[in-house]
Image (tube, rainbow, N blue to C red; front, side):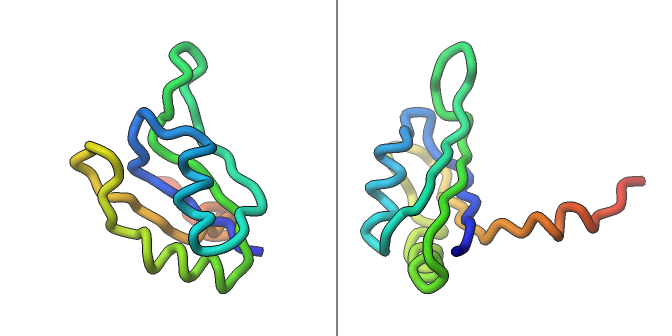
Length: 90
């Protein structure tokens, strides 16, 4: 199982719309789209879990694509929590 970080999602994005986008490349095991507590709109990022080969296919296909009427391209990266813990702050 691989966890993907998806950035630059439009404010209109919902868990259902993101699931639909990624399910074209395999089974989405779990999804979490960050939303603003007051407005309920998407904060622009989320996390998706898929099987390894399906996640790699989704990343290759969707990274850099434009979504909706946004002028920003999607960023799809593998989430690596170990890398975040290893960073030192100065």
